[in-house]
Each structure stands twice: as structure tokens, then as C-alpha cells.
Image 1 (cartoon, rainbow, N blue to C red):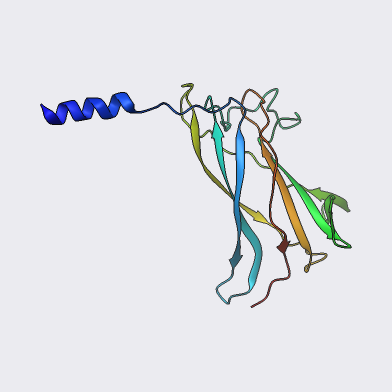
Image 2: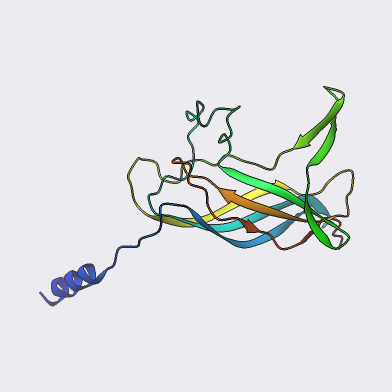
Length: 174
């Protein structure tokens, strides 16, 4: 009887978590990825935490028509901007590469689509951590200092706040 009473007290005192319906993200860190010989691979893992009040973060493979179609502005639900240090100031700029197939320069996109974080359409607050593996080293300028700015969108097209990484030195050697 005492155990049942204590269990009921614990359940009745438990508060429901509430978050705004707009996603909110917080920068957690960036981890360099090294090769087996301890050289920098040119890649890293960007980590950030998130909250969302109605749990509608992420996209299914079937989310491929407006507004999430390949040519639509909301195709990507994680938007990542590239900043390069120029004379000590971080400047947002495109990262370009030579495309052998088209014989012209193309722009590298760091944007991404991530899968739904809950598997059903239940409306409930969620929180957690996203880790995004990304290429950070520019082959045309392998010793840059860069930053990334990230924001995410939910299925209702609510946009999160923007976070920035700490400066990332891409010419790291040990």
C-alpha cells in the first residue's frame, strides 16, 4: 500500500515539459575526425541539441512534393551557411569547386535533410541531440579558419534560431 501511494505521488507530481512550437537549437560542439595515421580527414561532427513543442521535426523520404520537393525552398530542413575568416573577420561566402562533368564551377551545399525524430504524427514536446558529419576542408584552400551557421525547420516550416560553431581550423596537423 505504501509503495502504491508513493508511486501515485511520483506520477501526480511529474510535470509535463512544454516547449514553443518553433524549434530551438543550442550549439554543443565540433569534433574533428582523424584518419588511422592521425592525420585530419577533412571531416568533422557538428553537434547541437534541440527542443520542439509539437514534435514535428524531420522529414520522411515521401516528403518530396511541395513544399519539400527537390526544387522547393524548404527541401532541406537543416540549413548550413559557410563562413570563412578574411582578415580576421568571418564572412559568409559560397564554397565552390570545379565540376569535371559540367566543366564549370559549382557551389558546395552543406544543407541537409534529417529523418523524422518521432515515427508517428503524435503532437508532443521533444528534445535531443543531432550530430551531423560534414566535410569542412576546402581542397582549394586547405588551411582556412571557418565557421558554420545552422538553423533547422520543422514540417510546419517554423524556423529555429541560428547557432554558430566556434572557429574551425581546417589545416590541423598532429
